[in-house]
Length: 243
Image (tube, rainbow, N blue to C red; front, side):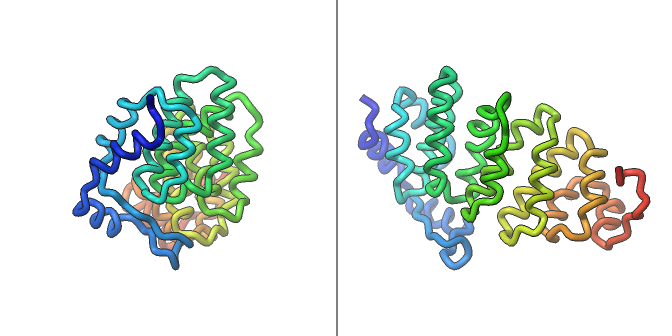
């Protein structure tokens, strides 16, 4: 039987205090910065993925119970279970996983938790559906909802569908949180990896008002002279990339 207590016991047995201390330093979890603290067990991603394999028949209810844990890696395990359940599910269960994921987004409360799951659940579920939920999430007061909206679009970007990320990037141009600047910049860079003209078109229109971190992430892979053109506000207003 794959119940939450068994999975939790399995994870606690893998705890490594030294790695837990390293995780505290690595992750930006200061309460004053993001409104919460976090607790780490010191478990690696390969160990978590193996645990998910060992308990792959766990139910949705079990995953939700684990998602409520105070331990970061237990919540990560819960999300990996949800991703696994979504991949193997019929449309009805996919909807249940999707709805459950968004209902419990307050527990998906660090950047890596969002990044390992949003583009594998939210994006695929919305593939052939209206995507207004992304725009609702992007305007949420909860930072993690906003990051979910942006990272979910990686699913579409990989299919060369840039409509939603470009619209969301414009919507979030005045976003205050650094984690969102990085997320939007990263997704714009992913657009550029597939269609540089599409990224340049957006940047030429908006780079002057973009937060610096967002811009730096977006142009990270540009040739250095081109990067400097953006960083020093020297992009020609009549650039061929403007349209």
